[in-house]
Length: 338
Image (cartoon, rainbow, N blue to C red):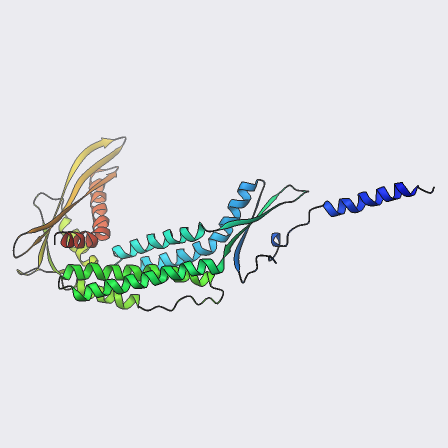
């Protein structure tokens, strides 16, 4: 049977018209993007049943590149002062640097944009493409690195030019912190920079850290424990001072006295657990003049099925607090009272 020409034309138009309107899968769903090339952009992909989830997954896919870099650098920072040959242990700058590295990485991640979305017409799955411009992000990172280098130099100059030992230490600590933070940005820049080079360092974190440790060893502090304090506090304070890098003076001519007090209160048995709570206090004073430079408090507690273990856990918490906080606390008290 021969069909009329009008019917043939209509059928042909429907066939080709349907093919023309069927959405084709974008190249970036399963491979590289011709529009957002690797030389110009970092990209991430996400898929889900909803647009919002697909976009979130695309951002996360891109962000994990930086999160891996910052996790590695933060781990480096935390272990930087933990080598057996260095008794100082992780200091204030280590924790601060890790926090700043994470904050700056979050700022980079906030610049991620969703460039395209697509829905599979058959499965109805949503796909999203996240992008981050290399050139713009690299320029921002280089600017921040230069600012940290300037801050490092300013701290070094302050440490060299002031006659006050504690101000020297505080400035030296800031210099180390700035450089450890800079190294975190350098890792991020090496991800963004297509050459992987970043910005060559001007300072050595190892040298800056060694210089600061030398300054710390020039401060002679004699630990003292108040009467009535929990047994074992004297050992905890001495260990924390050594951990912080200060010179423990057992003679009769120290630069400072560090008096510590910890009186535990027995809170009794609650729901099958014995509780201990105490006020941990340290006071820094000049040995010659007796002038108090500052006092700081921390609350500690311990709980256990038996009273003895609860006391030990409270002491363990005091030990952890002092090893983490003693160095910055002493520097803050000494510098703050100038």
